[in-house]
Length: 117
Image (cartoon, rainbow, N blue to C red; front, side, top):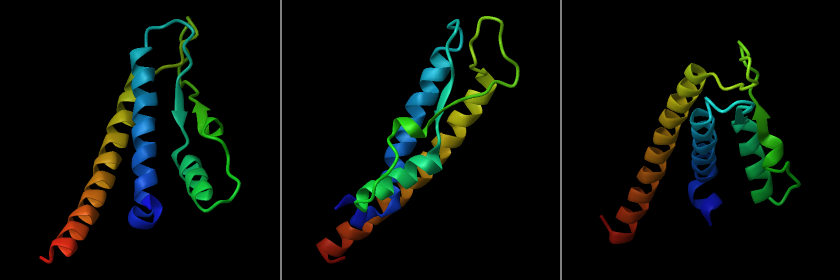
């Protein structure tokens, strides 16, 4: 039902939320020695979600997780670059907000149609 009603946007909203959690985890561990920054390959994850919804074989969600390569590695083995993470978080938040606005508009349209407005 979700795929038919919201199309790609329902899956995109879920993935954006998951990615926000991964990036927030990176930011929270910016001072943890040996922590390796991760991210979600959004396009690969979305393709996998849509393939599963269509009943096709798809990559697992773990295979869409990627390790970030630091521009300037730290001596303690931590690969989190705080500025990069903050930019990624902000970009993801804007995309999440845009997707959410689209889904809200779709729900409002359906609600108006059901109430006869």
